[in-house]
Length: 285
Ligand SMILES: [Zn+2]
Image 1 (cartoon, rainbow, N blue to C red):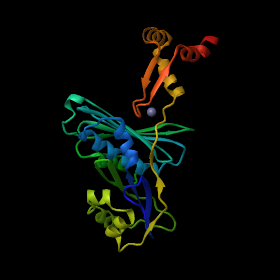
Image 2 (cartoon, protein in one colour; image 1 turned 120 degrees about the vertical axis):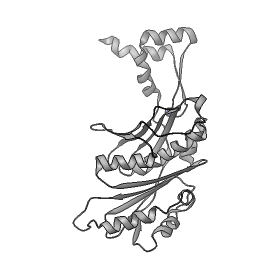
Image 3 (cartoon, rainbow, N blue to C red; image 1 turned 135 degrees about the vertical axis):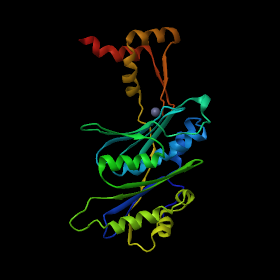
C-alpha cells in the first residue's frame, strides 16, 4: 500500500484500453524546497503544484537527463521553475517581488516553457501561452498542441504537501484500440476527484473510489526526492563568465568569492587559488 505522506510516483493503466495514468505525492521533497526559501503561500502553492506536475512527467523521460517546467509571468510572481531528472529527483525555485508577495497569482499574459535536456543529444524546448486558467490547463494545452496525446492533469497543494494525478491517452497499438467511450468515462470519473482526496488518500483507495468498476492495473511505485545538481565545478563554470579581473577584484576586497546556489542555498567559496585554476587552462593558449 502506498501512503500519501511518502514521496512516490506510481503508474496505473486500464486493461484493454490505451489509457494510462500517474499519481505523484510529494512531501519531504517539497518541504526541502520550502525549508530553503521563505516563500509566501501564494508562491509556495503554485510552486508545489508545478513540482507535482514535473514529478508526473518524469515518468515520460526515456533518457538520462532533465525536464524543466517554467511558468513565466509579467506580474508580481515572475517565475516558477521546477526540474526533475529521469529518477524523479526534483528541485524548484520561484522569483517574485517580495513587496507584492501577498497579491494573488494571476496566470495571464504568461508562458509555460517545457525544456527537455538529454545528457546525450539535442535539447528540446516547447512553449505555450498561459492566458487565464491554471498550471494544469496550460499543461493540457501543451500536450494538445505539441504531443497530440490527450492528457489531463489534477494538481493540488497544501501546507507541506503536493500531489498530482494525470490521465493520458496513448497511441493505439495492434492489441489496444482507442475507444472514445473509454476515454470519456474514465476522464469524467476523474473530474469528481477532490483536492483533499488527492492529497490525503493512498493510491489504492483513491483509484478504488474513482474506478471500482474498471479493470485497473497498478504498477510498482518509484521514489521521488529532492536533489540539487549544483557543485563546486558547476558554480565555477558559471562564475567564469564574470571574467578573471572581476573575480580578482572581489577577492581583493573580501578575501574570497562567496556564492549561494539559488535552488538549495548551499554556499560555495572560491579563493584566489580557485581563480588561478579556473583560468589556468585558457592561459596555456
Ligand atoms: Zn544547489
